Length: 69
Image 1 (cartoon, rainbow, N blue to C red):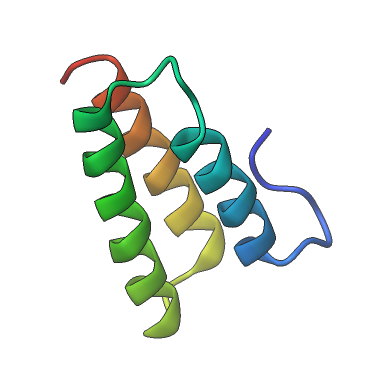
Image 2 (tube, one colour):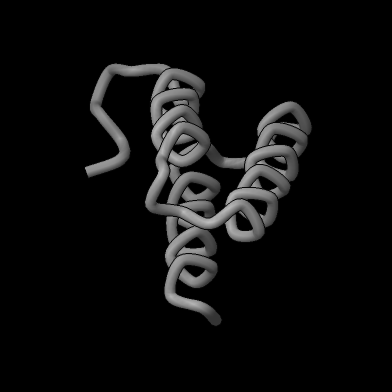
């Protein structure tokens, strides 16, 4: 589960970011796309987007990139 109750969303995002960036199993081209998603997510959160929905969207989009869609 990506979201932990009582945790700040940035903590979960940072953990997920580190997992992706330092993974040797993910090709660099996919890492680039995923890092761009994190950048977009950060902007959304700064603009006041709902944290729960944003995290779900991020997870689904990362899943799509990893599956090759």
